[in-house]
Image (tube, rainbow, N blue to C red; front, side, top):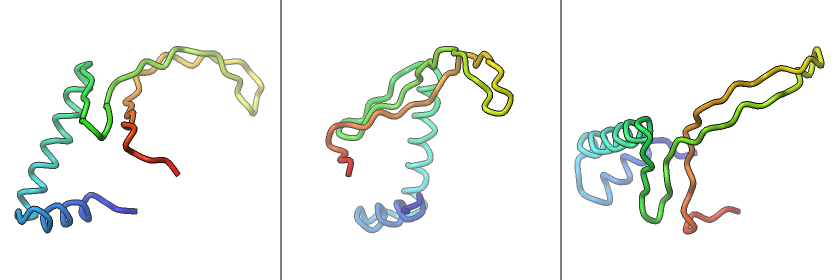
Length: 89
């Protein structure tokens, strides 16, 4: 698995920027995406995907241990929908 540190190093090497500058840009980008999505906006990054909030409706579920039916409340989900250029294997 590739972590954020690996990505920072790779971007710094490919762009010639200092790693601390790349870190500052990536941290700011991620914070901005989170802030916008939390405000209800959709954030679309061309040829990457869309970040958004999606409401998961309330539903009834069964507790597997007790077999009792419980009500699962509505939830706000943070969702990423990848663009078509991201390939699944």
